[in-house]
Length: 277
Image 1 (cartoon, rainbow, N blue to C red):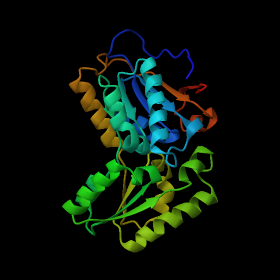
Image 2: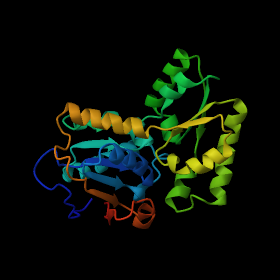
Image 3: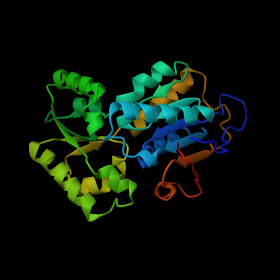
Image 4: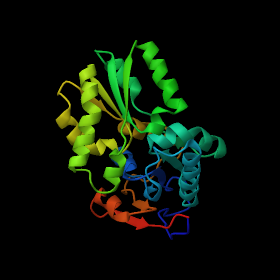
């Protein structure tokens, strides 16, 4: 990526350095919102690599290369911690990133299988995620553990086409309704009582998902848990913002279409488009 002139770090203090987050597109903003709600004094820098979205249909090697480039960008702009705000990126690249950048704390995201498994009464839960997440070794290990631990039946569904519709500004389209019904109704027929959203884009579809699902089926995602873990790691490493009298500064950056990203931004949010090589 080329130099952007971003300067969100007000001083050389490690405490004032931003929390860095990245995703393949707008989905990671659902994580960003949880992080900011929990830590309003922290500065943040969010990178939407929407020029290369979606990640879910790419090979593991491609995903790792993109995540490496995203990490280098955030580190070049002083990120003190990096939240991989993408299930696909986490399940395919988090081990690589932690091994390569050993001094950098990384927070990853996995589908919230554990809380759904522990709370399910029917012991049948649905997981809606990308192909790369569902086929990853990390997901397989986690899901197999909870299947055995809780005698659980897991109904997995690839959300093919959902991210593309969100990223192209067609979130409220008839195509979206058609796909959601296609993916969710078979899970309902199987008797699930929990639906796990395994992609950070999907919380934006909650109103439509809840309109399709019966009221007894609970929907769960990882956003708040990720924000809590981020705060915990920052505290452990002595990196929390010390000045609690000021509100954090925030910047969203897009490698592709900025207009889509801006539709999800809070009023007054600074945003910037860059060229990603």
